[in-house]
Image (cartoon, rainbow, N blue to C red; front, top):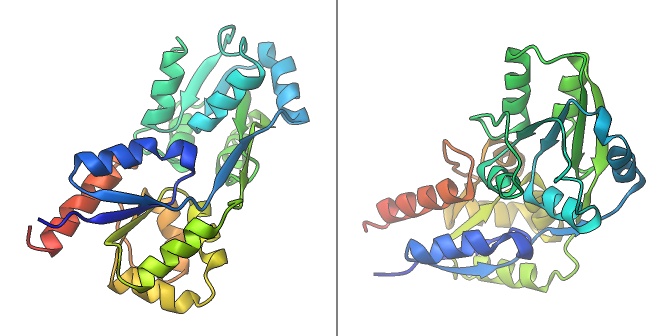
Length: 257
């Protein structure tokens, strides 16, 4: 049986789970990160740390935020005395490993999903800390502000254009030569950065739509793929594991396996 070759565009330090799942499901992978993540100790993060005792809630949206906080302020999470919300299973598991109780995790692993839960619970007039990258969408902080909450945004890491684009160019060559079977995107920036390097965007979008199974982790990333006219699929639950399971199920169905 042919082993499907899956391209993974996640940052290298966030790709190990995806690579492991691909192998467990009977495929092989190539890594071509279209995004680099760099923890940073910014003034906004220092302000959040200084004001942690005034927080009613803190929201964690990615594992990289936890890593950054542990790197610069290893005692911050230990002495946290407020309610905690998270987006996503992986972030949630990492928070729990720190010995922190999670008070809220939406079933819909998106900013919209979390905002909906805050609205349902009438959480208003609170001080809410959101450590994250400044390139993230404004949906969550703006929505929480509309509910009457005070938001402390803190930049804990930067989402950077990949320092080394050789792997992406090699991936493009493989796409043009039909050497991969599927490609995965796990955030809007992984898509945007990928297409920044592409010269003939229409050609590559057509190949991704017709020759390759293109899989998004969820609807937010899917919207960006749609803007580039790329045919795609995404799972009902927005996790890496569910994304990969969907990929293999569809690939096997299409190839009569």
